[in-house]
Image 1 (cartoon, rainbow, N blue to C red):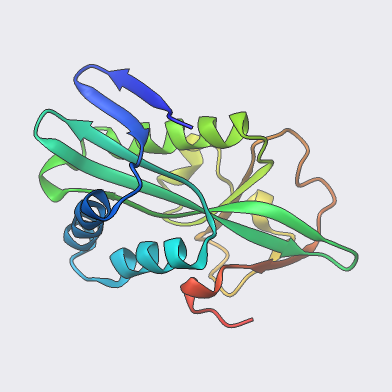
Image 2: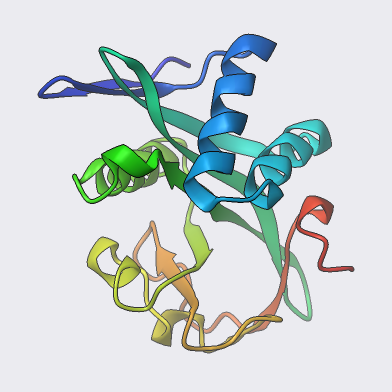
Length: 178
């Protein structure tokens, strides 16, 4: 499904499947983080087949940002609840602090809602992600390997986390074990 939003001269769209665009996305993640880890994570999540959404931000000069959502689960005592992991999000350094990352996040979350997703989870900066609806408080009942001040969840459907107790299970590509 093609999902395109135009804001000013910035286009936000779903990635195009194929090696040439994937190489650009790999490069953007590597440059944005200054290391290959997040770029390799995207490649490995694709190989694992757990992609929910992969969006790019494009200016006239080409792709300048990327956001990736993958399938993860919350294991409760009785069932496995599907959730979306937001990781990573990357914007080329020369385009950072211009709102591109925020636009990618908003469009990505809107797309997940349209596709019927109920819960999104992120490990991120506690001063940045709450503006999009992520909350440490919403994640308190979820067991994770991450520090509570950086581990956040949001309900894409109101009430989706009400009474939910469980342990998060990320895709194998995250390297967190099972």
